[in-house]
Length: 96
Picture 1 (cartoon, rainbow, N blue to C red):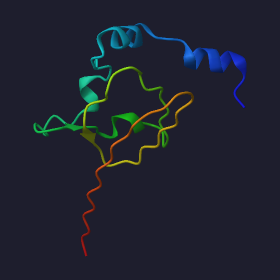
Picture 2 (picture 1 turned 180 degrees about the vertical axis):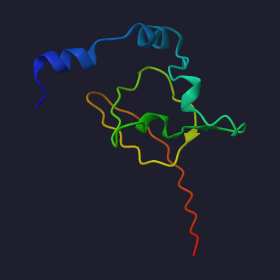
Picture 3 (picture 1 turned 180 degrees about the horizontal axis):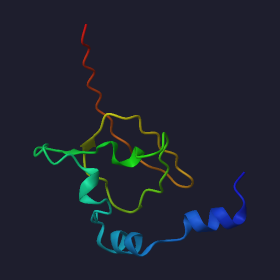
């Protein structure tokens, strides 16, 4: 069970979330270094998040659909309250 201080912190709206809720439009919050600059056709997240660490935790901003993207790491989402719709397309490449 989360303590009340942490719960309140997670539920509090950030300025970016306020904007996204008002406009219903995604606002980029990741730095350019988080994306593979060679991939022009899609948003490809890099291992930027794992510098000097094996696990990366973050709070996703709410109230706007997140753009399609891909990456080579495992992503796990947890919904604290409410609901979310997640669309996943899996492409597995095997090299033998």
